[in-house]
Structures are given as C-alpha cells and as structure tokens.
Length: 236
Image (cartoon, rainbow, N blue to C red):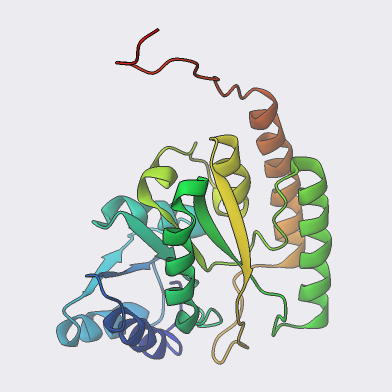
C-alpha cells in the first residue's frame, strides 16, 4: 500500500471476512511502501483489532515489486494470495481461486491469475492495458490475457524460485512458465477506485515496460529446462 488511507481499512476488513470463511489458518500481510499520508497509522490501529494482521513498513518508497517480494518473503504460509492496495480487487474472489489451485495441483498449475475482463477504469487505461497485454503476450507467448491484475494465487515456493528484479510483478505468469510451471487465468470482478489516485502513469509504464519486456524475453531465450529420464532411487 502506498498512500491508500481512504481504502485500506475497508480492504483489510474484507480480507478478514474472506479469511474467516476459509477452512485453514491465514495471515494478512500489509506492506506500507513509505506512505506520506496516514495509511501506516490506520494499519497499526487495525493491527490492534485483528490478530491475523501483520504490518511491514518500508523506510523508503521501493515500488510494487519490492513491496511484493518483501511481503512474500515474510509470509509463513505455503500459498500466497496477492491483492492491490487500492481496493479494486475483490477479496470475495479468493476462495474460488484457492479451490481451483488445489484442484489443479496434479496438473502442474502453480499460479491462478486474475483476469479483469470487465475493468472499472477509464477508457484510456483500459485501452493502454489491452495494447500492452497484447504486445507482451505476442512476444513472450505466456497466454495470459491480464498479467497486470494484482489478484493472484500461487505457491510461495514457486515465487521464491523466480529471478527477482524491479518491476517483475508485471511478468509473474511468464516467469512462472519459464520455470516449468503452468498458469491458469480466471475471470475476477473489478471495482472502481473509491479514494486516491493511481500511482502509475501511462507513459511511465510504457517506458519501463518496454525495457523490461525485452529483458524477460532475453531470460526466456537463455532458459533451459532439463528433461529428467531417471529419478534417484529408481532402477535404471
């Protein structure tokens, strides 16, 4: 979260409601990316009321990828659910995504990625995102219609094995597939932003995205997945 004082309380409460409906234990990790408003103080107040909530405060603003990596690294669970801090992702979609990950475990599905098929954003943001996803999908062949959706469910072990770099969050499905895992995209709901403004500008995303896109394409070309014929302990 970065400067999400108007959204964070409702979002955390919604996540708690979702977590309480699950059969397993859960924890909520909120990473405050050096907010300059009162986001952090609201999170600390919520932490006194919600025992499952842990708050990680970054001293310097590091961006979404670093905040994401920090949160996953501090997590205790084997399965991670990520949501953007602006409240546009709906936690009510999480249980079905978790169930699908469990059901597809034997099919080597390592990530369930949200697909904001009916986005509640401006026309320009929808158009630029559609173009960016099409170009990325064409160059990387990751078959993911909406890699920018913050709502994802995956195994912590899968994430920690990925190559880390700034802005990697935009390419998580491609990186998972590069490591030999499969990604399944499912339609999720999307809500309009209630408070605050987006932290991403179209031109900024375009400039950084082009450089990163060619970098990930380079990683894919240099990748080799071994085909194992015999496993230890088997008769050869």
